[in-house]
Amino acid sequence: MSGPLVIHGATIVTADDAGTLHPDGALAVEHGRIVALGPAADVLGHYASAERIDARGRVILPGFANTHTHLARVLARGIYEDLSPPHTPPFTGGLAPLPLPSLSADEERLMAVLGALEAIRSGTTLVLEEGAQLERYAQALADTGLRLVLCERAWDRGRASIGQPGPFERDAALAEAGLARIREFHARWHGRGDGRVSAGVAAWAPDLCSPELLGRVRKLQDELDALATLHLSQIWGEVAAIREQRGVTPVEYVARCGLLSPRLIAAHCRCMTAEEEATLGASGAAVAINPAIAARRGLAARIDELERAGCLVTLGTDNMAEDMMEVVRTAMFMERVRRADGRQPTPEQALTWATRNGYRALGIPDGGWLAPGNRADFIVVDFRRPHLTPALRPVSCFVHQGQAGDVESVMVDGRWLMRDRRVLTLDEPAIVAEAERVARAAWTRLFAERPDLKAPPGLDLSPR
Ligand SMILES: [Zn+2]
Image (cartoon, rainbow, N blue to C red; front, side, top):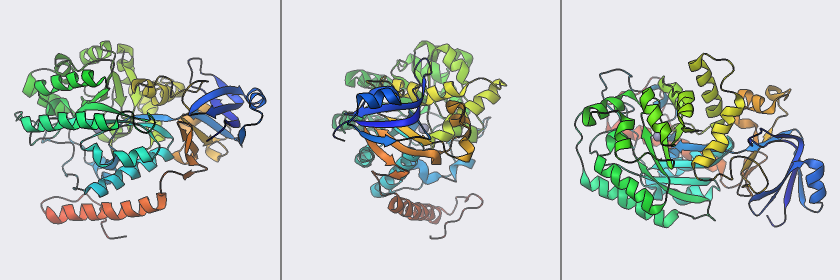
């Protein structure tokens, strides 16, 4: 974009502290920033010669920040949602009784890009991606135009998965390889994409990391001056494994290893005692609540308690779906059910978790809310739809009734990633067709190689 761009006629939801709305508002964008925002007449008067977009009937909101995901795991869509582990002993181990099929680097990249497509379509502008060997698809993600925090992962428990009981077999080579990957990835990717991409550090989960490794991850975080993330108190099997291995709770364990800080994003935080919530909150850590997958697992984080304790509440998708529209609504619904309160949390609170808080947790305090000088990361939502009419309280309608398909346009860093429901940075039809083929082939290979595995009911692997 050369000169300024003015989008006018829309209702603008700023998500600022006062909850300011501008009906018949306008915002001007230049060089990746919002340069003016307010009543349309004022902004248009000030930018008389600017390129204009008429957005009457639409609502402009800050884009969603997804603070915890593994994009390529859309591969397990339709399968892992219904295979959660038990919440009481015996914990037979692992998050799912089926392994994930192995993918080539090309196939994994394709699935990650499929996840990114879904993310953009649901109004996501910022994503924290956690995983091992992110180098395989970092370039493809950067090319989507999304704002990214990419956290390469370390762990050192050999031959085990999250929530698996039994002794901790420490594998020193795994630790060294993980730490080296984090360091190399950071050197290569931090600050790329005109500063849109940053690199963080990840310790996989408490029961997969020795105290020595956690201490070294924290040291590396300080050395790189980076954000850190880990899965924490995700399932009851993890709590049991930490109790068995370390004699304490997961939060106490990672606290002792020095991991808690305001620059930590702790994902899940749903199998916790009140004391753990207090410890985590006192550290000022952010929590990435993943309400959709939590609901599928039959679990819920105690969002209100975490927030009151001092945690910065943010939202993520985790696995199998990248729809932040569903996530923000599920967070509000689940928390209302859990608290038996039909008024709290409010849609405005849930929207803040999903936008401004997420940006703040990921080190971007001038994003996730709309004001002059802030980053031009926002979404344009078409409200001329039966389920959004009448739009008497736009934020409430959006959180209670909005759908990913209502998101018409998405801008990140002043660049359109989607315009009029067409994703501009990706070849959507080709990616969808190829991902369908690749995923069917991958699951078919797995069941052919492992005839001992039980296929879930309704599985259809016939070629398309
Ligand atoms: Zn996760």
